[in-house]
Image (cartoon, rainbow, N blue to C red):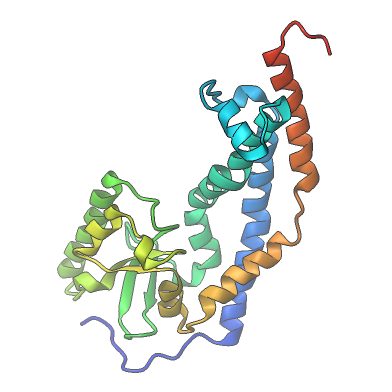
Amino acid sequence: MTERNNVQQGMSEVELNDIIKRAKDFFRNEIVPNHIARTEECRNLSNFRLNPFLDKYKATFITGNDEPRSIAKALVYPRVIGTSINTIFGNKLQKFCSEVLEGFASTTAGIDIEFIDKLDGIRKYCQVKASTNTINADDVQTIKGHFTGVRNLARTNNLNIGLNDLIVGVFYGDYDELSGHYKRIEQEHPVIVGAKFWHRLTGHANFYQRITDAIGDVALEYDGTELVKSVIDDLERQIAQALNPNNEE
């Protein structure tokens, strides 16, 4: 039968602090260096796909003019604080699970982590996703296929794993932000989001706030102001040359 306990004790403070320490080390060692490298790539105009219909508009919209420096800012800022860092985190998610959540590592194919749900006492087999809009239509079938495979294997081994024991855990966000693709999964399997996911994993309702605050502490160790300014300086010169190829200034 599926493992059940009426009362589940939350993780100890030592265990919680260990997860937080691992999360902070992970961001220092994996996220920050990659973010810096992606920012450095913005020095070269050739790394952007310019849109002559929109680039000057975007520059004027955020700065009030379409000078080369304004265009550089309109190109760099979205890359540095938007798509770049989000992509890095998504790509590193499996490594986050193996290094930060190693105590919950699963040996079951198609499952990222396993844990005893601290709210209902039932073992959960969990696929982890970064945020509320990071899967596509193909991912839905892949996830459902993995879950079906787990249930088939369980039956072969005379284990009782219900549909509600196979879950998707979303690291951050709110339930109301779930995309339609997640809603399709939820027709068969629970999708647990943000604070509720971390609550079930650790047994502490405020752990989501604690771990996100801890990552914020890491951010205070890095000031990218000069790096971003330097990148924009270089890009500005290239844009000015591209707009005025015969101008030697």
